[in-house]
Image 1 (tube, rainbow, N blue to C red):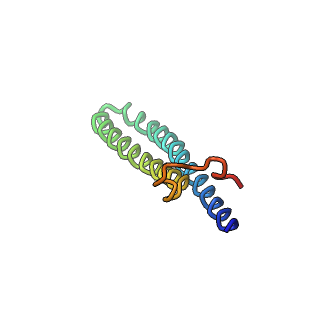
Image 2: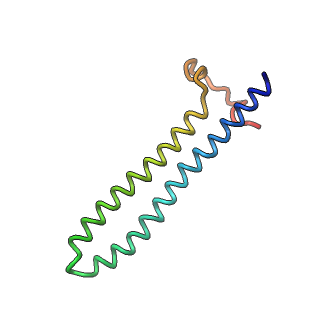
Image 3: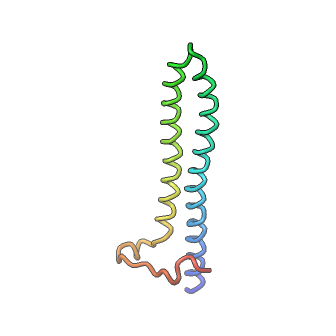
Length: 103
């Protein structure tokens, strides 16, 4: 039974690492994506003919990008939350922090 508990703890630890990686990776990629896109939109903003359209496209692009990356980050946060507590512990409202993710 102890081996099964260690195996479960290993899987929880893996889910924790992957969830945090997904969460923080999405945040970093969002910053890079928006900064690269801003360079292009700044060039388009310098052209008076396309300025009004490029500003609208920029607002739509940034809104969709932020929503997409935030959704991925939220999914990572959910993986972390689900990995931390087993269903029986969730119902009881207690988590044994001493044994959680310690291998």
